[in-house]
Length: 126
Image (cartoon, rainbow, N blue to C red; front, side):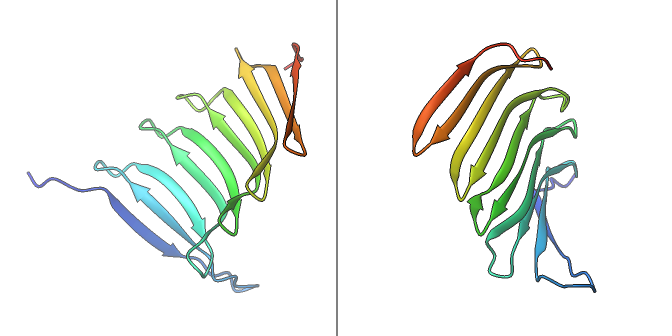
């Protein structure tokens, strides 16, 4: 039996109403399962949605890039893709908010203002 290597397939996307010259790169494992989907701009820089999957097909990480920098929300899920483990918000590669969840509930919230951390330890309602 021939061994299949990890493949990357580039799918060019162009919507007739406002083509933005972006494309998605989809990476597969040796069994054909999707490992990640990353959106790139015309300059081959990450720009748009990013999704990383675990072997069972569940979403592990979901977030956004803007011109190669973390920008917007990034969420890390458990291996089943159900419970949120962490939530982070970025602006131009700088984290401004980070929340850690324990047993599906917010446990630690950290805000970043002028590179200073402000921690909040309390139990929020889910």
